[in-house]
Image 1 (cartoon, rainbow, N blue to C red):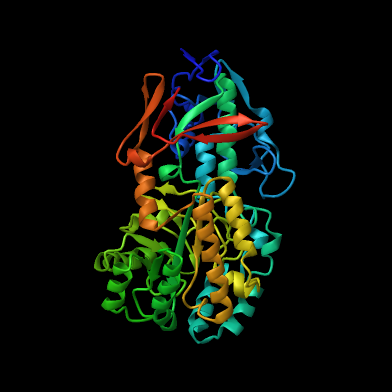
Image 2: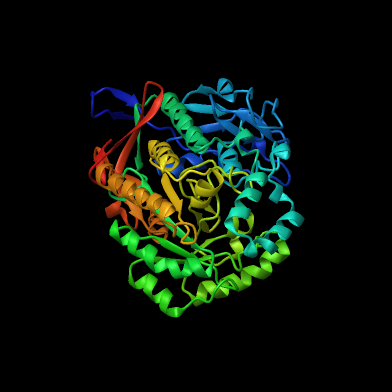
Length: 488
């Protein structure tokens, strides 16, 4: 089919038909997802735009390779030669991509590769020499048993020792890893070239055309932190920013119903943090299932829809046991967390029914006490890198760790920076529940042809904006329209 390019009047071929799933890669015991799924789900572009097919049967072995410079991938391939550890010198599979009659032939399934990154399914491969000391369950249990009586001055030295090799980690990239976005952008470029079109319409990432999104969250760990929380709300309100408070429902402190009512009355949000914050929630599947039932009761009691695990311990495959709408337990690059890894993306993504809102910046505790930095230079650098991809910039500021003069000054500087970005760069500063609602609505929206343009359909479409993705100097560039419709 031909369409008229509204810019130059030149007729160019439009998108081919959505191909059938290439089942050559199917194997017993392995679930093969549609090869086009990741690109369509991320961009919310017309389903018949990408036309990928596997170049051959995928082997059963999994390993590392690259897909363009600086893009580390993990999974199966049809060509072999996979590395067992991440690092330099990985084989570049982008050179093996072929195209013919609008179809792009890939030596891997990108949906599978992206799932491996988002769900950290690479973490047990290539990390043997770079595990945190706290990866040992016995040491972790002993540490968290005595942790409540240890002052920060002692804890930070122990944690520095445990995390001492963090700067040696080759993957994920530090301070922000955008591997998933690089893969998707490369796939989009290949699709545009194969289809012979200059640009593709899609539904912009954020409502009202916002350039990026910022989340501010507060994990309350101790009684002192709980007492300081109202003061922290005062500070947030000075900058017209509302945040989410994650509270520990059991053992650490008593939750006063008046505090909960005050949080919500002031426009803030309440979510559940772990069960008792002892670091053992994910130590075994049986223990998690037992604790999940208690967590679900607290979620219902406090009418909370969000969850974050203590110390950012996590297992994405178990989250379905929790009655939550969204989770906030997965770091982008977990170099300074006791559980190494990272989801390698700066956007929300679904884990079954649960929406993951990844932590994309360094925690305040790590910044202040592990790195010994009370400036916001690292936070600003991470924010800039995330905004280059128009992603989600998410922060954790603990009431427990910002109540001193120096850390509170740093936190106020962060809020001032966020306020400037909101005003000067049109950044959407939102609560987790608002991002959850938007991302779920966007996930159900679709583009419908209308005359010479497109129309966005679905709940919440009035907040959506039509955008176009094209290529300039070998890079993906975006243009966002001021309304929900535009020319094809």
